[in-house]
Length: 218
Image 1 (spheres, rainbow, N blue to C red):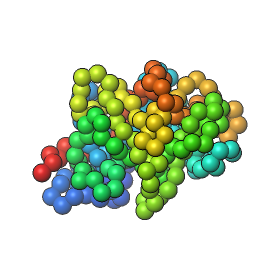
Image 2: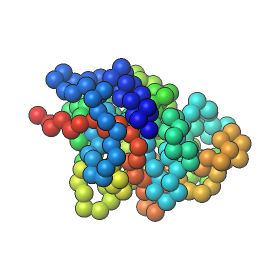
Image 3: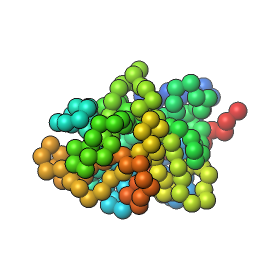
């Protein structure tokens, strides 16, 4: 665990934009206690609350629908393909290190492939709901990558171990997973899709990661 935390911190130091005058990401430590605020630039895994699978992607395209990079739920807690970088939307005044409040529109960038968590009206492969994929690059992102953070309960600022939903702006679909699993290209991994109804299987929790210190907005 200590080695993994060090490697993530090193990645942040080498690859993420550090605002002038802020603490270097290498000084961040992996958050392990409840109540740690999640900020822009943090790298984390999202855990599906009911099944405990992590939101996951890899350089394998869907064989149907859009043909874009697939997104699944994966049971292996230690897999590096389940890390996502929390980003602001373009033209936002939010900066690296700022806290994120409920109702904010954010993006999630897959750490390894640099593509964005994306959705559209293509049908998902197993259930026929809204497909969720990874798409674009560091310099290529559109509104299909925009997700609204909805915090469950009374909390206003996103914190680790807090129950959340992510609602896709273009389609209105909530990021969703369930027990339906792939048998071929991602054998044993479960489908991630979008559905427009609020259900218990829409709920996610920020789990393992490197959380940058909070920088108050000026």
